[in-house]
Length: 620
Image 1: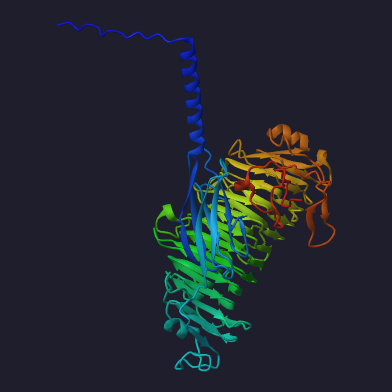
Image 2: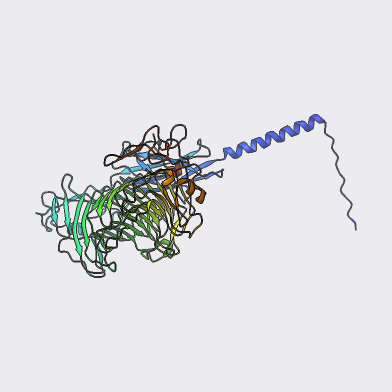
């Protein structure tokens, strides 16, 4: 049987009919395009949250209907928020729509605030979350400790306990322990936790008084690390307003710590404490460690998360091979802000990864954090008994961290004010943004990226923007303003001011391990010897003269060599804002708020009303 072809229906249309159908198709196509634009939508998660004052909360914005998924974050209609309603990061680099909110120091009125994510593709589209702020401890029960008290007492203000440890053993979620002024020669281990419903357990000095936790004579056993305050897998804890001092060891592997938090846990706040004279006296790096504050995420997948470290002073500590403030291992969602770290002989603030602190390498990395508005100075290894005069102490260090924003910090008179690298082969610091920081008088180099040797890790997808560096490399044999070491890849260095110190060295890319370690442009460079005599190192080749460096590197097409016209460098501290006639004014490239931030170093809008941006840490 054969198949006959189907009959063909021939329809004739008039010219008018054809034109009408074409118009209809065009209109329909236009309607489809318009619908596609109209389909941009934003959602936010979580949509509801209840937080304590100064607690952190991560939010994730999801944008659909467009390839541009970037958002702008607001709190109560203010970009970036403010101290009254809480502050929020821009989207954390290396994430899709994730930010970190830090609540205000006191409950606002009204107590609920709105966190909003606004689509940058279509600013008419947004989503909001409601955040209710509460005081941390909510049971209403307050207990007291006094140097004249007795642990057999009731713990009331008129009949206080004698020891902080007894209080820690006695209180429950939602309770507050107020410690009266005086010296307490004890170490305290906190056995319990608060919770989201009843609230935190708060340990604090009585307002207007200072309780001193003194470690004089307290032994640290070999192979042991513990603090004058020790937490082991705790949650919902506040430690506030103590002086913590005089904890010392001279034994290898015996590690004295001011505040030591290990294990896992969430929602901890370490506020307004003064930690000093935590000392390891050994003179070799093997086993010589002490820390003012250690946050060690030693479990997996459970992390230490949502931790706030704010308003603390860390000074005059002798930490051997360790740091003053260390967030190491499985630590996630942290805010480190408004701390004063000074006069220490090793690293000031360190976010660390890949040291085996977590039992699972996939979680062994401090991440998703915000280090901002800290003041760090006089951090040098020159007198560290372990390093025997060798410089290398960092003010702010990201050693294998990821997805961290470091911004609006003041760091000066330190060996290396900012370093982003990794000390472990096969690993990198990644997706770190260093922006709007003020750096000067570094002993060795103002800023450094990349591993210190070819056999360690490096720096990948990190962004260094809108920083001001002045007069760095003050020690003999120093490396100038910015150093690029081994294994640096996919990095961006733009919109910075670099004013050379006594070496006249500006960029020190002393290795050819990677042919293009970073994109450099829209920076402002200056040395008092002039452009033709300025010093550079590119891919291991020393270069004299700015134009020679530009030709050799193929970089800096839009970077002038000119005096930035600082307001005042004749006095200390210097005023490194720039005059209105400065070549740095409107010199930068606007990379968007997610990259350059919302505020400059002084707290002014980072981008002017015309969308222009200065080079350096200050906007006009």
